[in-house]
Image (tube, rainbow, N blue to C red):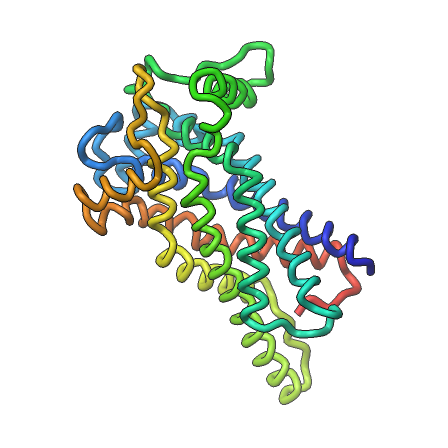
Length: 317
């Protein structure tokens, strides 16, 4: 199998995994984003007591569609991001390995994940900014809502209008607000993928020894991939979550007068630390864990099984 074919199979598996993840867990993403921007001082949102109350309140005030605001850029961003991530990650690993059979060190996995994350962040930041803006629309934002552009398919209307409005009101540089913490979040993927690869290696070694002793085949299954994906995600979230809060707050839409809530990412850090302390950097972490730990399990189940379908003759454990 050629290197190019292997890379595109990896990218396809990543893209399918990303779509499945977003579709299954999206309402929790809305809740997380709204918790993240609620600094307790100036807010355009109702007071959510907890994750369940937030879901109930959003549904009551905005309908079920409120739980799927910004779904198009989320699907687009996640699908493109995962596809590009696995593609760049696979290329980096190939570059560090002289042949497909050579095992890479933890350092190589870390470098590969960091490289892939940085490239993906540069490519997709505008999509994530639009997603954040649409997720933060609610009845209290009535005079500042992005309206739909008629003539386009319904799912494209608000995305297209948001993009056009941002370019008109704030310029193209606004599409890269939050890029700094976004690049720092490269460490999230690096931590997650390094942990995943190392835990996977340990599990494969264990099953190979068990196979020899029992004389039976013990390939990794979907439960194994779910366990590996969820475990690696927890460590990454706990370490890098503050970067997500900083990015989300930096990407908020300016007021009607054109005054941004925060001037830049560093301003977010100073204001959050001053008024909220360390707890401010972890707002919304409960729905984030509820969303991303199972979502990561789904991602790696889909990813590994799509690879098996694309490469039926290749041993995947």
